[in-house]
Length: 261
Image (cartoon, rainbow, N blue to C red; front, side, top):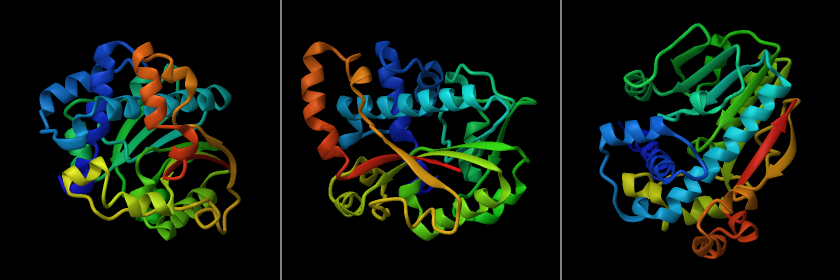
């Protein structure tokens, strides 16, 4: 895998570690895959605090996806940059059609661990090539999960993707985490992705540029470190985690936006 593809092991490692502890995220599939892939971890990737952070982020996305499916049971779920994530198994709400998309090499590895069905498919999908949206199934509503992907795309590429989704689907719901411009610059010096060779990422301070020319609107900014999930940590760990990932300070580098049409 190339450097960007290797970043999928960072959240996979975190989810597997936290799942074993029985808190925040129940993810036996992550535990299984992490054990078999045996990807070497070093530096910041070994941090238990990063593992907690990755698991909490995943849980926030899970809960949002669950809520969107309950409101839109007939929607197509599109998980862009799915990596080896098991959200398709963790979300309990039934779905009619779920697509996990990522680069061909990632999907090849993914198919060793997941089985397709009438409702679930895995496809090669490059988010930087907006024309690929035209190959997706029709649906009145699409629920788009973009976890840990926007920072590897230029803003104009995200905008092209959103324009394509806007043109194809009547209703679009998106949850997307982003680096701020400052966060993208700072990541060159202190970011776990550096451990796998990634040095170039992009950021945005709001969503105005990426939703330009679409009917999408930013309807909410979510917390990436909600108190209800932090409370699942040991009491002795909660205070330190809150200091490391203080919501007000954290959003100076990292934010989570919900977009809707």
